[in-house]
Structure formats: structure tokens, C-alpha cells
Length: 409
Image (tube, rainbow, N blue to C red; front, side, top):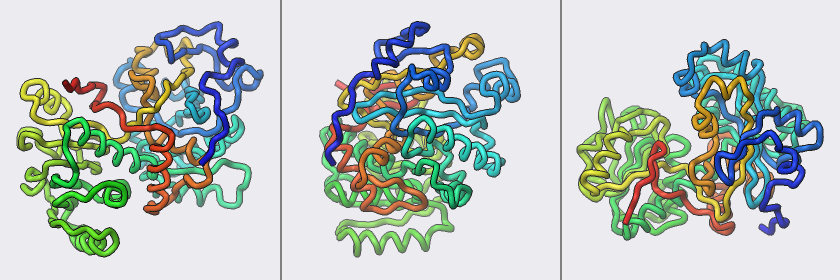
């Protein structure tokens, strides 16, 4: 992979035009004017890739507005070009669909319609690949429903679930938490909670990329027992795993085998199923679940009081260079919601940080061997994304959870 020399700064026409901008930080600019209008006037350069998101429930909870008011007054019931991120490898446009998080599964046809409209917008602003973030992949059959909806159209960008980059990011996070704790994977008992697309692909990529642990514990619901037995066979035949494999089906609570693990990887959709108080001292947690598989409040409390566990979210990358971001914040929204909540939708406190699923769109736009993914993952594709991230100097973000950064001496 030999990238062109991408600009490290925002396009000059961009920064010159932002005379109505406030600067909450050196790397974030808030723009009151429509990014689409600025682009149409030639005051914003085109993007290389885009990412689709949706309206989080926090926006509804933190305002006095109704759903309809937010959809109509903020969004005009259309996709919004929310921000531009300038990375070392190119520019990403983030679009927010006018649909609330809790409607993604209930109104699948609406989600499809809005996704196609957003793809049209993304194509017009220059995106070659568009990533589906958050719950959109699972709500669209891992992107397959969108591919079917646009069948026969050659005028739209490619889509990607971003799961290849997400899995690569989780493996980089496993590597990071072990480095921080001065431990080696060869000495660990590793439990995987949730063996869906991301869980099983992360396990496969971990065995492909890192030294093998002594024990692997597979945990999912009882109905997946036969599937877990098949995975057990594949770990030996496909990856040459020679350690111990335990199958630990779960019911309403996790089986005791999970609490015997020294490293726990979460990739489930069941919230708070992992009991922080039952963890052995020294336990490490990497969680890519949505919502978290443990109580972040209890985890933070135990970390601060006892300093005997480490935990982090699994899907966040740290770039080698700061990412400059322009965020659209019109007056109507500025007057209705805390601007830090608004800008926190896409930008982290650390200007080096970016989610793997957002970054995936740019990787697939720029590099032919880092293919976009639809449907279930191919291991080699995940491995290409993993190698690419390391080659370009990306690593996992500092250990963090729900905005809290673990201070480690």
C-alpha cells in the first residue's frame, strides 16, 4: 500500500472560509453554516469517504424537544452532513440519518430508504466508500439489505459494515491492554462473550495475528451450543490452537467459567451481564459490546478504589497524527443542546482518536487490498485491515470507557 501524499491539514479553502467558526479546541471547529452549502459554493473540498450514523437517544434525553421537533427542526427529515474529518490518509464526511437509535430495527424500510438517500448525498460530495456505523450493520443484515435495495445502480459509493477494521481495532486493543499491564497473551485465559459476526471474527483474527493463549472460553446462549462446538473444532484445525478450549453456554447470567478468565472480550448485545464485583483481581476487559456488557460506573469505582482490574472499549483507534474536524452546529441546534454533547457525537476528547468503523470507509476508499465488507467477514480481509493499520502507525486508543480515561502509572 503506497498512499499518495495526503494533506495533513484541512484544505486551505476550508479553513479560509470558516470565518463564522468558534474554536472549542485546536483541532475542532464548529461551523454554523450548512456544510452542503459551503461545498456547493466551492468553499469546502470533496471527501474521500463517508460514514453513516443515526440519532442517539441522548439527544432526545438532553433536550426538551419531541422526536418530531428534532427530526423536522434539526434535520428537515433528511440526512445531515454533520462533520468532516481530515486524517493523514484523507477526508471523511460523517452523515447522520434522521432516525432515532430505537427505531432502527422497528422501521427497517425507513432505514433502508434513508440509507439510500444518504448514499446519494455521500456520492455527490465525493465519497467512494461509505461505512455503516453502530447498529446499522446488524439492522440491515450486515449491509446485505442495502446492497439489495440499490441493485443495478452503478452511480453510488460502495458500502462497508466496517467490521474488518472494527475487528482489527479490537485485536489492537487486546495487544494494548496486555502491553499496559506488562503481560503476555501466552499466559492468559481468554473468554469471549458473544460469538456473532464481530466476536467470532475477532477471535479468528487474534489467533491469526497474536501469540496463542493457554485457554479459550467460548460463551454464547444455549441455542448456539452446536455452533460453539463447531468453532472449537475450527480453532484446532484452521489455526492450530493447542491450548484448552472450554464451551460455556449462558442463560440469564454468565456461567462461572467466565470469572475464571484473566482476559475477557465482550461482543454481545446483552447489557451489564458481566458482574464487575465477581471479577478476580488482575482481570482485563476489552469490550466492543453495545451497550457495554458491564456497568461502567462499577468498573470505574473498582478501578479507582482497588486498582486491581483494567478495562476499555474495544473499537477506538489512535492515529499517529491529530485529526482536524469541522462540525456543523446551526443556531437552532446550538440553542437546544449542550454543544459538547453535539460535538461528542463524532469527536473524542483526544484529537488522535477515531472509531474503527468510521476509519474503515477511508481505508477501503484509498487502498484496493483493504476491501469493504458486506455480510459475514472473511479472515484475510480483516488481516489486511489489521496489517494496514499497523503499517500506517495506528494503534489502539488509551484505555477508556464512556469518556473516562484510565490513569495508569
